[in-house]
Length: 340
Ligand SMILES: NC(=O)C1=CN([C@@H]2O[C@H](COP(=O)(O)OP(=O)(O)OC[C@H]3O[C@@H](n4cnc5c(N)ncnc54)[C@H](O)[C@@H]3O)[C@@H](O)[C@H]2O)C=CC1
Ligand SMILES: O=C([O-])CC(=O)C(=O)O
Image (cartoon, rainbow, N blue to C red; front, side):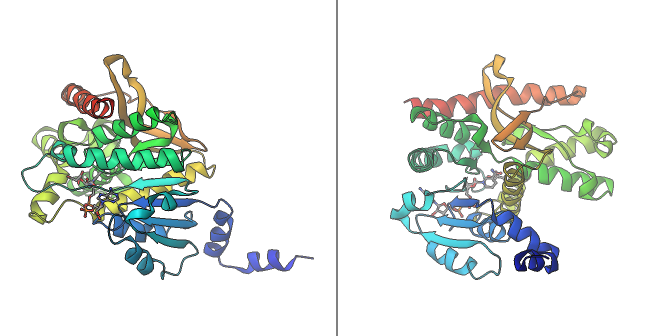
């Protein structure tokens, strides 16, 4: 005879079974910067993710309000908001910390222009994670990602708790844009036009490997150049259209939630979860570039395997040649900030 619990589980619709299975993993996720343009929709999307069992929302302003609002959504997870002086409480027991805290660009600015403000914000948040939840996986959205990820790494290193398998720069928006824009020029659907995007997350450091995809191979000449430019400068397109009101927030929240879900699936033991992300990487370390985004398999401990970039076309070799020196400078700037 079936126990009452087993009978109820079998009778439940599949989504309900999924919820109860995932609840066993107790995955607490924190968003630092939850009151902002990205933080708010990201918190909503994470509330909708059945792999998130508890959501901890922190900001220097507005997080308790966002938490009260999002907490009414009828999914199983618990939500709690924390005020400016409650960072340590917000980080207690968290498995994953997503960081979209910091200022966004205005027209005419580069991501690097955000360094002076965002470097110290990210460093201080990383120091708190090192102190309160040193085992947590840290997902960095705050720009300039090419520098903020090395800042987090160096801060954790200083505290003696850096584990390179648990630190990720979120470059998913570049992957999302590449699939969407390639679909747009080929008439295919975005699920058919997945593109591996490697390098970093700013202008020339964003390198889409279109030659490795069936649809991308067919885009040549001026259309190829225009497509690459649009993928590399998609962020500027949004900054310009928002005209002083900030940069991408909604598409970034989508990309952030998508990457978080991929990581949680890997942490829960799902095999074959592979996506580009900016991590401590051996791929170009011999050239002094020790962070790089390439396809990464996500597993029980975070980074499971860093994939090589694979064969490049002549145009992609040129893109890589432009990417690497700039990326190196950005990484060194981040490290120097923490060392100073
Ligand atoms: N990785 C990527 O692909 C992308 C990154 N970004 C970056 O994300 C960052 C956030 O962008 P938005 O949400 O549009 O900005 P926003 O200004 O709307 O929100 C930022 C939030 O961070 C909070 N904040 C500031 N200092 C903090 C601290 N010490 N602790 C906790 N919270 C703090 C602010 O109070 C604010 O609520 C920017 O640096 C932006 O450039 C934006 C789009 C894409
Ligand atoms: O462009 C920006 O400043 C925000 C960003 O990183 C993006 O949209 O890719």
